[in-house]
Length: 232
Image (cartoon, rainbow, N blue to C red):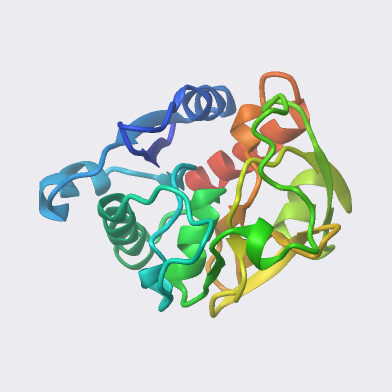
């Protein structure tokens, strides 16, 4: 049986075809989970999931980590924020299934565990590199990141350095409790983390799903995730 993988998304802003493609090619069955009014109405579906992916999208409401909006904050969707925190909590506490956070998904996981974000990197971390490369081909690498040995990401890629894309204007400022940074950019921004005790909670700041058609290396992340979903 192919594992059933839920993908959190916002129907108003997110094209999920690359997530669907990557999950399917890696051996899973993707199912889209829209923002709903009530967790109870979706419980029947959620209970069938073998894994959860939190996808990219809009900026996250800074009130969730104790800050007021600052200059440079982009569009936010508080309804999606609150909904995905609910299904994340359900996946971790009730289902105990693997979770993969991608870009915004990494940021949401970080907030769930008590972390905070740079609301706009260009303004709050001006000494860093340019990470919002909207005019750069999204499926091609644009930066090099360093991966720590003795981490799940290293086990997956078997490399200390890989090239990835970059399509975000927010990033991890304070790392959440029970999370360990496992990948950094050259400007020291966190590009990946994992939970210190949960078997498969991983976040990456880049967008591997946009690279899997041209870059087979990035398919390894989805294959490892699907393997985790079948063995958990």
